[in-house]
Image 1 (cartoon, one colour):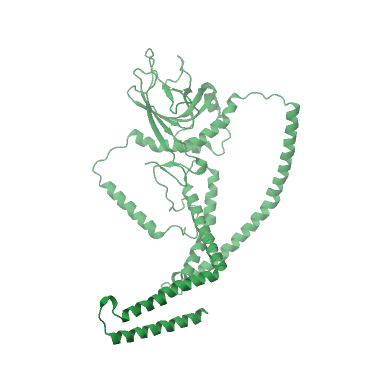
Image 2 (cartoon, rainbow, N blue to C red):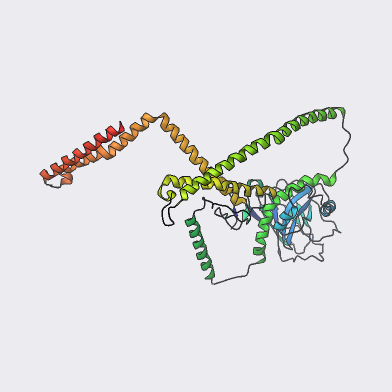
Length: 462
């Protein structure tokens, strides 16, 4: 099962296509580890360029029969790309340590896998290189093979998940009821959005599922493809950021000396420099003078609210003795106040945890459930406030009409309806013969009670 997160997020799709490769019958193959009767799987992103320009294929070789393509650098020779990989030019300017992504993908570096739109030369070094041919009119690439007989090739087309929108593929469905994994983040209050009974029920079902798994009759060892599936999914999740980084550094592989600027270009550059100087002054004022004052005021207000919330929570949770009831156990209003204050005290800890996402690649999905849980609880509180304010303003603006409708509905159900039913029962209801004298006496008695209660409620209402 392949699952995707969140969000109102679009699900990344996988498409498979088996295609035959071109085979020159007069060629021979020596020293290739791939057997001719195997199935070569090539994972190919659907957003790769389809032009007929020559390019270099970059990605990872998971095994002799599994190739994962990350990007295609067009107009660059493979030798120059290999030199850039060894020097580190191709991965220059990474916002975070590149080893974090490579560790998720199961490799130590990016690899040159082959070329596009060029026939292999007779003396090409690596016999495992892939030679693909793309066409703007075709969604699937074709591949050149020197095997005899030709090897069957399976092209797995996939849409890359957008890491900036927290899209990712996973074998395990996302769980929003998670405890904080960081040991250094100790919260004074548990997350109120997680129901304890629901969590216990979930654990019970998980134990039952594990017991059912022990009763399976046939057990088979995981195949090579099954063992590679988690690594391939991580590569799919990380391929977008890796491709962006390499595409950004691709111009450095063929950089050339800049020519001198003309007079017009110098005038434009000086004007741009003046605007940049103005923006620098404004940003300096905002960041050095205004921003610290705003953050200090916000921190003081947050600490003050936290102290007040702590005091109110202590009052709501106070018990005369251990077996007595607390105030939040007796009043529904106190229970709601307790839940909202716990959420308020928990949000800063959650936010500090989410801030750690900026120190990692977007493809690292460990903190995605915390992000969703934080904004989910925040959105629920905002919804409660918005709906309450809207209903309150509506009642205030239409107080007379709302009161009249409520009075009509309540009197119709509690007074008029009950009175009509008693009058109906004093006669022969549904053809039944009753004691007329007793029925009339009881009917008049109850009608008098209803009229008396109606008059008393009217006086209270007025």
